[in-house]
Image (cartoon, rainbow, N blue to C red; front, side, top):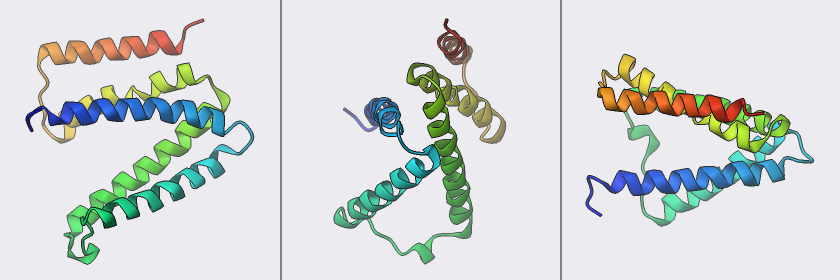
Length: 144
């Protein structure tokens, strides 16, 4: 696969792992508070990522990063944490088959936010697809 399409491979793997995340989390939070479960999950992710970055030789000096990079990585981390807390809470009280599709509304929000903040301009066909995703999410979330 050439580098211009390499993103698709990684995005598909991300989707597969995200699906397993929902299933494993739903089973794992049956007898524990969702916020505490999020803490455990985050601690494990931290350990795994430290090992991964260290063993692949990608460790860098954090102080060498520009302030703008730090600012946006911190904002991203805060958004991720908030997302995880909300996701686990939703999984604890709702069906995984309903929670996971609504979580994927992030695709619609990313498109809108990228339009507003990053000046990305999806084509009419892409907006149609984004609208279809939104419609599909609503159909799945409110099924009887």
